[in-house]
Length: 211
Image (cartoon, rainbow, N blue to C red; front, side):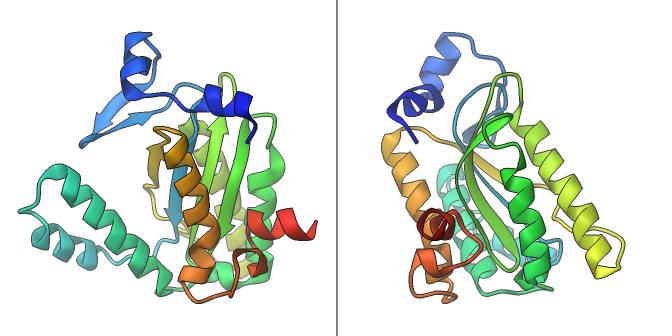
């Protein structure tokens, strides 16, 4: 990511509200942005990768925590659970991973700047910045709709492919950006799928080194 794009893509909540940028709304303690060229981390996962009963159990276990701590611990548990590879793990099929990879790259530079990404067996992490009038919600919907249709076609199945709600978080500062890139690139290593980030075929780390 160039210094110019970092300046454009990273902005504080306070500054955004002060200058009146559209698209801010609150979802818990974290503000959610969907109206400008600000970098976002997004995770979306397969429909069966995270059982609802597990989420409900965690909700009860963490109910005593303050909202900020609740959200942080919930995210930590979800990430750890996903890395264990529960569910159908359809994305371990190279045919499906390729469909997703090509979809993510299709409008890079036109609708968004795709900074880093990884396709795991049952979920995806990515960091991107919407361009111009394109909203984050529009971009994510396009990715999920197209890939669900094409992957189901390969699998000769119908029905839900992705979990309905993705996790997203806007990038607060340069340190947050750096940490987000490192987390995404190292996810296959953390999950025990590769020795180094660049060894995982379905990732931007691999693309940067081997293409």
